[in-house]
Image (cartoon, rainbow, N blue to C red; front, side, top):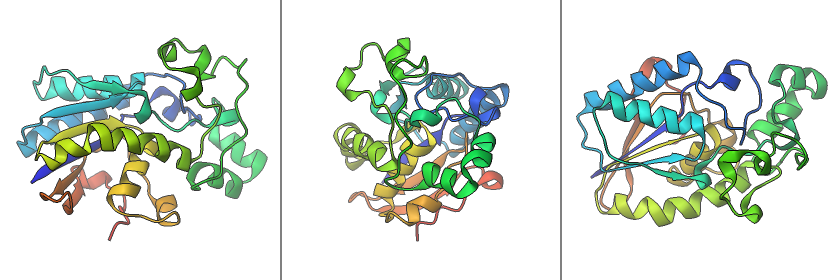
Length: 238
């Protein structure tokens, strides 16, 4: 049996301001640091020996996993992968979600946020929020940097990385922690729980709440639950 623990980063500064963040590299808000610390405590209480650690290339995920590992008194290194980054929100990047609901209507913004293959207009490459203008992504090949993404696009970059670098370790009964983002984790959940394009649109991922997934030798799910049940979201998986 192996454990795959998925954690969405703690609340970020732009989560707090209700802004579309995507690939903009913002840090954790004070409450997000507390959520990360609580995540570490919850995982530590399970007394599971973790073997491998992964995060996205974004600061809010990196600092979340650092806090988790420090809380667990673990000094191991962790892999950072741009493929686990949040979905790129295109021209919505940096804008306030509530203001955009007033401008475009709640239904349209919900489509942009939760649909499978609808994406916002592309973000101008001249915009300072475009990833090509952010130092974090200077070593990523330009052809891999998006102007906008749907959840389908996000899935199509997350899954090859997962299958190549993570899934094989789970088959070997290793325990793995992945700290990523709402949409990169939704992509993983679509695959792991075999959710169709309609069900995945209903899935919400809370910040800073570890989702512990137990898998058998065949990588079939035995059990899954959020470690902080007071903030658990409906998994919509069975």
